[in-house]
Image (tube, rainbow, N blue to C red; front, side, top):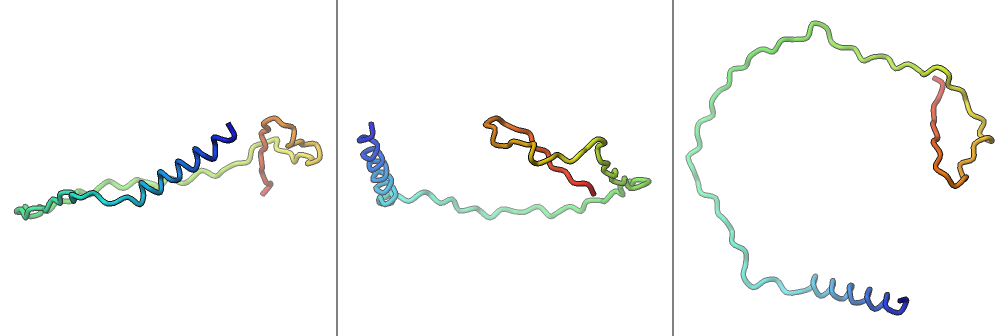
Length: 92
């Protein structure tokens, strides 16, 4: 199997080079020329005033979750070989 891999790889690379460097097709593709048509005159739209909101909505203030405590970095093992959930936060 090891002996076949370089041969298959070389064959695929050679096929890609040959396909990329091949001659262009002899017949060009048809080009469609757009015909000039009568354009309808643009119609003016009447703008209807939209109702304004009574009071702009204020973004809610984010609050910190209660009970967050700093973890001792020496007690955390990230190289345990199992997925671990790590949460980063900062006291502001």
